[in-house]
Image (cartoon, rainbow, N blue to C red; front, side):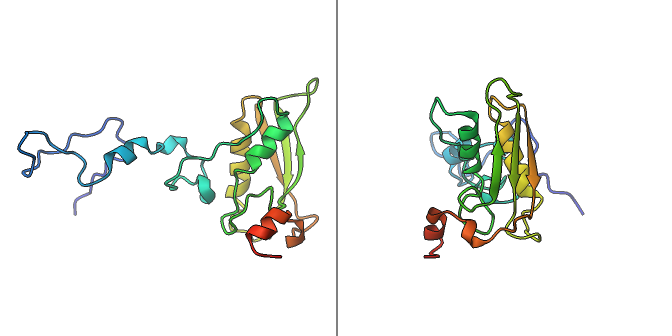
Length: 176
């Protein structure tokens, strides 16, 4: 039985063999019927967040969502903006509006500015995202230029309930 070579780890694109149906102009199309422009514009594998869910997955066809904050935003405001780009895999609402974030400690000047701490919960102790969601939060916070490291602590005290959701999240989920 032979192996199929996919070339997923190739650094340089491989040349495709000449196709017998090449145009009369002598030019060959290497697209194989694919939208080459879209493929070239798509983010590369290493640009994705190492996660298995949400709009930031490695398999997502969309590029990672960048946080939006004012140029003069404090570090805490930047961290909150980052948290709003993380989504629960089963609920189409960001984790901040969902009420999963209990506390954000982003030091102000004079303190240790590289250390950020987030205390969060999950929708249940058996949440399928228990391994990936905190890792995604940590990864995204550490992408901020001012942050050297981030700590994400998970707690179930108090237990998350739908009442913790913002009005915006409840509206998005038709809970009114």
